[in-house]
Length: 436
Ligand SMILES: [Cu+2]
Image 1 (cartoon, protein in one colour):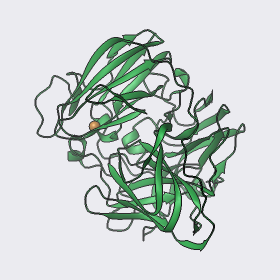
Image 2 (cartoon, rainbow, N blue to C red; image 1 turned 120 degrees about the vertical axis):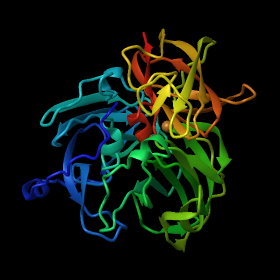
Image 3 (cartoon, rainbow, N blue to C red; image 1 turned 90 degrees about the vertical axis):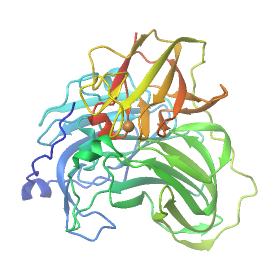
Image 4 (cartoon, rainbow, N blue to C red; image 1 turned 135 degrees about the horizontal axis):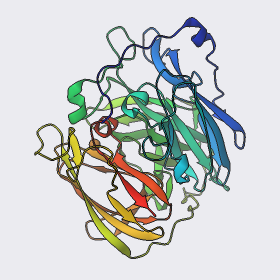
């Protein structure tokens, strides 16, 4: 289990602050990128308050958007200027296992003042993100994350392409970021903030009639958001980076932590992004000014990504989520367990040969929701009638829910399978699959 007591306050020297280099908004392809993980004083936009002590990549919160084209190589050096270990995970990207950034499983944690080179190509177009994967419930909350956008070789015809990061910030009475995670959070809903925001990569006003693409990323450590967007007739075109064969009318879409969605549509008025999961909360938006002739053609499907042929499942595995507040007993040592096991064990959940398929029956036997994320490959959600559903890397299960997922394992290595509600992961909800 990872440490979860309140950490000491970070001491940030004036010199360290002066050295913080502002990063460009979008970093281009095929250039060597540097991610300097460092303590930074950041004034949080939209929050009335003094600067907060955060952790950033190159001084910006959230981290700079990385934009590559499908098939490009990412070449990035992580410099650890923190006073603790860190690693980067490239969420949703089919990377070689050694590039996956998972401590104890794929690489040693990077100590302070060490550097590590991440190098891989990006086979799938879509909306992805990168984030710290060490003490992630804390490091992601403090700002170590950013969008990773892989553009199509032939991108769809849109006037604007805007990344919308859904933020959930915990702010204290003085208006500063509150780093404390209260102990009860780990076994309930997780670390839930009190300021929710939609952080837009391009806040310029839109014109009525513009066709826009919104790339939604739920970057919250634990909060589930039900996104509703007014001011456009949106079509859902991708989930977790992967194009849908048939675009769907975008009504309300629930996104668990780590999940993404791409929406394309024509602007009909001011764009407002809301969270309607509980009381409706306005997260942000874009004002509308001016007008253009609307396109006569509707929104079509995005070009598909190369998908592995799906064979007959060679194995069926069950993964039972246990524990949490009010939950039944289990044999794990922490607040949560998978199949009576808490935390990362030396033994995988299952071993499977490469290029074979497996179904996993996910059983949420707890009173809390969970967003289960598989590293290294996407999986299909299987409907209750056995139909093959969406192709995702993270699947959300409400309390008491069961869902079968099916995966063709094409990527050799040790792949983490965990709850992406990062407070749950920190308190035991993690296992791994060995693809040989
Ligand atoms: Cu969970």
